[in-house]
Length: 225
Image 1 (cartoon, rainbow, N blue to C red):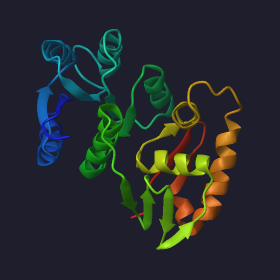
Image 2: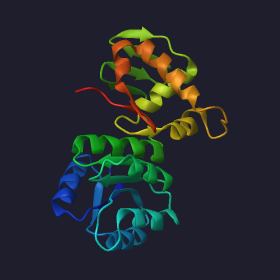
Image 3: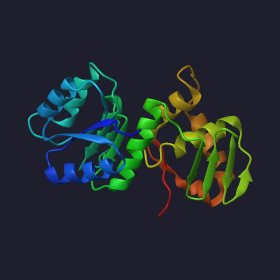
Image 4: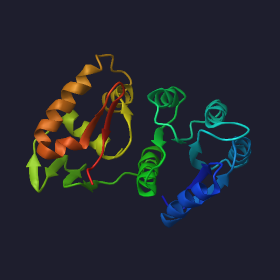
């Protein structure tokens, strides 16, 4: 994923530099905008931007307005940054087509991990073996090990865990999980996710605690530090 272009939009120059420095270390090309109007100008003058990191509170045009404008013409992945941790803001973000949502302050390393995860999905680059927090997930062999012990998962449990692991640290709504794991043509009750998560946690033992419940929204896979 070298040299993919990312637009970082934030009115704080120190924040832009911090994010840029970490992204450049991963060989991403970074463009910067200090307000909403500049962000829109840069986006529409560069047709090959792969992802936007967008602050909400900005002068001229805020992040919501920028998101609405871009979403009329493009499905480019958008990660929203905000100083607020209001659930209403997060839900609004998902309604507007935001891909991920990160509250300040945040770890730059986690932000980069989320950028990597989003771009793996959107540019079609996937790792065959993923190792995280004592879990080894082999997509080709369809096998999962927890602390070097094989665990027996159903096909749907394996797909669910894969989706969680490849979206580490990301808040995932039940609707989003249904759409990506059960596909868009699934019309069942979203509670089927809760049932599968319960079984998956049980089979993973202590590592099942990595799957956090986000009340009123869904789940987040997060490895305890």
